[in-house]
Length: 131
Image (cartoon, rainbow, N blue to C red):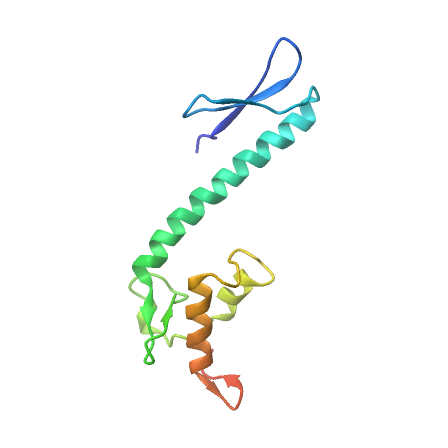
């Protein structure tokens, strides 16, 4: 995968980054190569994460299912295998993406749907059939 931003240094010694697509340049406001590398890596990593989440959201929209109470949820097994399992099965792994992983904010629609589905399967205060 080609990185979105490249690093270069101008004659005055200040490091800049350049967007490889738009060719827009931005000063990194440092003459220290290690600091410039850290900054450019952070920018590239953030872009990589945004690209991943866009692909994930598209797949999630495709595989979103409804339980017997019409709660939207994302099955742990995505694709054709997902609907074959109980909706609540192995949802602990999705919950770990919310906390402590903080991949999804608590108010995300995927989180809300999955939590509603889990609440609908409670028996005596415990989620039933998680596997």
